Image 1 (cartoon, rainbow, N blue to C red):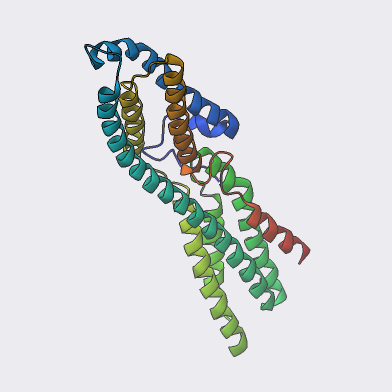
Image 2: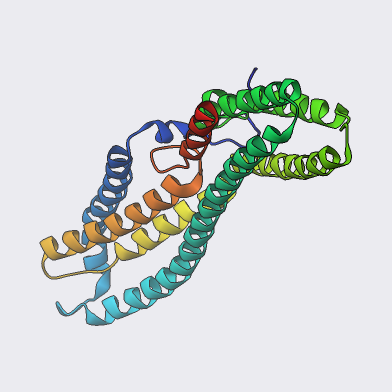
Length: 277
């Protein structure tokens, strides 16, 4: 019932998934806003000194900076939009796969009711054990970013017992064939869930996203306003926007970790039905 070792390439910042979403958001937003405002404050004197030589009109300088800021924003916005869409799509896929696995488990449990009493009880008890292992062992492991083999062991044992069974008559042979087909679907759904628990953005892509945010913020430092308060407020808003987007992407990145994650409610419902049945 042990857990597999940590997969290669796991983030060194996994502690963020132990934080409540509001605290994680504050952390992301605070870092980007602080970086943006501090940099703008420090760079402002240099930017003012180099913006123009004879007047206080910074329009030409700001037009040039705005051009680069706009180009950077478009490229980064497209990248971040594609990543966010992919992360959300992956989250939805994993959620659907979990629902499918739970649905197949419930249907298989019902089909086992057609077996003779001795085999029926043995098979249903084993499938019930599988469901408990998913809830009690697999999900806590998913929350930690590792893969548990507990439910896999039970499912392999269940498959071995099902395939070893010899139907006594033609009717039972047809039902057994349907059960085997359902079992194959369950095995497929089980593998998809385990694979989905590791379906996260690669670290290299995270570095590109963070670098893009830094470049966008740094370019904004070179904008010069007559009033420093206005410039700092605008810098803070840019930092807040980028921090919020990075938070949202990170919160959805791992479908089984953090507060915004796929839960085991579907299997809880199936187990309650099994107990009542």
